[in-house]
Length: 136
Image (cartoon, rainbow, N blue to C red; front, side, top):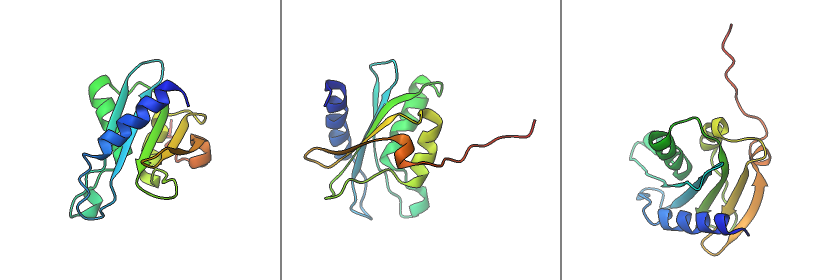
C-alpha cells in the first residue's frame, strides 16, 4: 500500500470518529484525494431524524472539497471506512455524486478499522452512471 493511500486511510478512520450516527449507529469515514495535488478531504456521515436529510461521509468530503477549492478537480482515489466485516462500498447516491469528479479508473479503497479490504476501480463499483445530456 502506498504511503498516500495509507495516510488517507488513517484520516478516514479519524473522520469516522466524528460521525453523527445516532439513529443507525453506522459510523462511516471517508477520505478523498485530489488528483495532481497533496490535498485530501475527509468526511463522516451526518444523520438526521428525517433520513432523507442525512449526508454520507463520501458526500461530506466532496462538499468540503468543492466549497474549499472549487469543483474543477478530479479525484485520484476515495477511501471508505466502516466497522463492518465485509467491505462497505459507497451508496448509489454517493457513487452518482462522485461520478462527476472521477475517471473510470479512479481507485476506490474499501476498509474496516483494521485494514483496507478491497481495492477496485470506480467503474467496477458503479459500472453505469447517469449522465445528463441537455438538448442543444
